[in-house]
Image 1 (cartoon, helix red, strand yellow):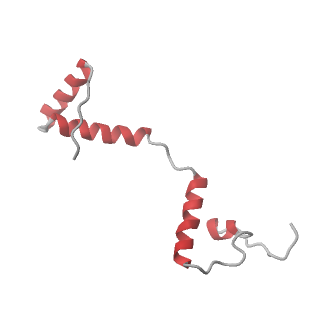
Image 2 (cartoon, helix red, strand yellow; image 1 turned 90 degrees about the vertical axis):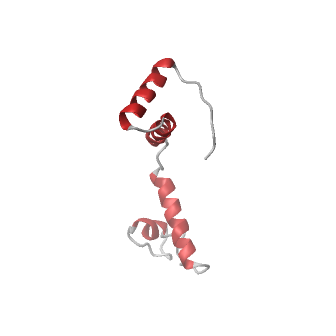
Image 3 (cartoon, one colour; image 1 turned 135 degrees about the horizontal axis):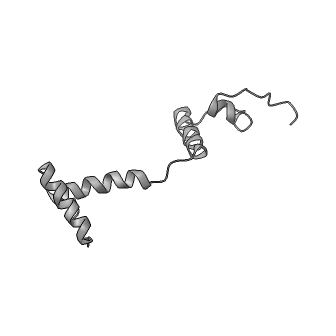
Length: 91
């Protein structure tokens, strides 16, 4: 664990002290918990396109070198389970 010093407004310091006393924990423990919970609420969510790309990467790792020949045409099929397109059909 890394030691960090921060400056807190007096009111915030009082609230942390109160919570620590109420819960029977140290101020450091309460501060860590509050920071963890706060970071969860402001952390950017992964977009669906990011999730789709990560899913393709996970699937590619399973394949280990032998990907379907129509992967670039049927990426929706392999990613989302959409309809499979004929690779020979005109676009």
